[in-house]
Image (cartoon, rainbow, N blue to C red; front, side, top):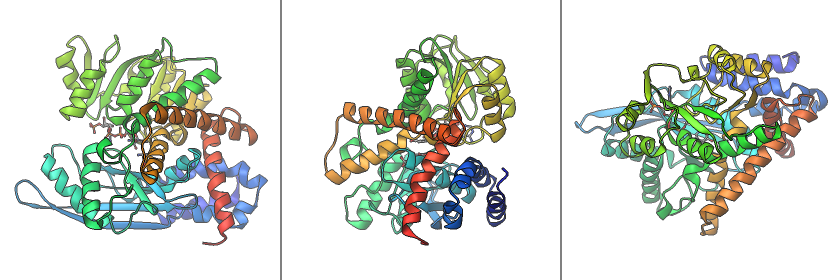
Length: 445
Ligand code: NDP
Ligand code: 2IT
């Protein structure tokens, strides 16, 4: 970065948010991308818009006490970062994972501003969660935790204010418990959460949306560069919501998904992963990916290994932040991988992205590539407002359209600012402009 204003601003962000490296990383990437934008349009500096943008509108931090199955009181910490409401109500998921602290929620909330803007739909940026670990907890414990979490969160959200959804550790079960508690506390049946069950206001295709959307985006990126999923070997990390439906769509598009992982290790099945087995292990039994060998003893399981060691043509990281470091990126390149698209949020380190870009690997950044989940959440909000529901095919067609547009808008913005082919810069710029221009219209507020 050469622009002194942006350099100083990044230093202030780091000092003000000490001990939050993931947030610093997310801000640094965006500020770097904005360099050509502010040089062409100094109004974004003079108006203070960028300074306002890196400061959340509101951070809510609260105690979440609950009683475990042994009658013991447990206390977790809850967060909601309402980052930016320039273009719509705060929108973004809730993450339940022991690694959650304020810096993780801030980085996710910051990314969400640009991602949500890219969808073309009227949603602002927010994120929340807790350091609660759902692993090994009974349904009753998860329910009591979710009820306690929502008892406090309900004071801060609303269908036109802030609409949370799922993320790591938060799926249909947790959304159900939280929606039930909200409805009971407020005596209102409104679209205050997305990812709801189909019998109580959920949208068809929301479950599939992030993984499907990732593949629609990737398919368009490949097509635009004379390549395709057909006949390609794909490695996907994670084996949760995003990974499962990315596997399904990539397979439908003609690829063979040969590996999946979880935080314990990875499986390789050269014939193509048997998704029914994975869905039973993960969605029904809430088990570990190594149990895949009970269904397919001929497959391979590597305990504690790094899934990026597996040779592939296309890599779709769908687990967590910073899961591809420089070494893994070099390994992927050496093994002939020609495309990487991010289902997870910020899964590649800056060094890894550099390796991909230097070696001509097609790279679809998270804000663009995984926006299909939140886009479909916004479609769920529209259906809730209309008290109506669209068919699976209608939602899926809109999702596909949105992802194809995100690809082209990001590619176009990159080209306009002299960075042709750099979708990281293009997505950041295209996402920024809509939010920043709205903020300019509001003046200082
Ligand atoms: P799930 O909880 O359904 O699955 C998460 C998967 O990632 C699991 O396989 C989990 O393994 C693995 N994982 C999580 N944390 C770690 C870690 N620290 N180290 C190694 N593996 C890990 O979550 P989702 O599929 O919903 O989310 C996956 C990613 O996609 C996240 O980055 C999320 O932010 C992003 N995302 C999700 C969207 C959605 O709509 N759900 C939308 C856009 C992005 P294990 O079970 O062992 O923990
Ligand atoms: O990171 C994300 O975009 C999500 N977890 C989905 C957010 C949403 O509101 O659907």
